[in-house]
Image (cartoon, rainbow, N blue to C red; front, side, top):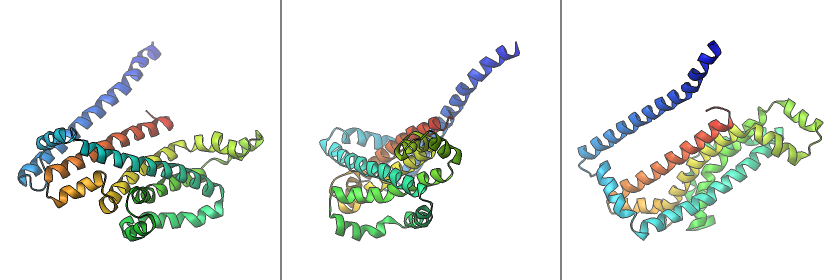
Length: 262
């Protein structure tokens, strides 16, 4: 009887937790909207447009081809930058993790590069890549490559040695050991690295568009600032924030799923 009585309780627990999370999300969203409204009214719309005014302007903006051209340019550059960061960071992290000495040498160098403000490298990027898509992708990769590499490197280092010994006992070659043993075992950390890389790659692309491009949401944001078009800048920031939050939430759920958590 006690086991039967516990089953509904255990089944209802995840639902109650989801309900609490939804309530917390609703409260935080309401508070942010209220704060947004207060700041917009306090500044008279000079610094930031209130929520309703922003949504009204955005509704008109999305009906123009100009917005979709800039959005498409940003998404293209971001997709390339994130793909290079993910694949390159994963490969580099696995390589450095398997070679202990190389990892010990490279880790502080990568960590130091990670803390450097990438805007300071703007002249070098322009000199090497020029203006346009290549410069935006370079900025995105500079921001997104290191997190994936460091997370993968750390995951490989903390991998239980018994897994590698088991792979050797099963006579798996290097590629099979990596793809069937190491990557699945390190997947939660890799996903966390990809989640951080996602946000930083997007940030890098936007910075690149602000400095070295005439297309993209970053360029649209700079244009709005130059023209003192507050509704335009607020709308672009709103689109970027909402898109980043939704994507980050999806990747966070994926990371929890890979680690066996709900």
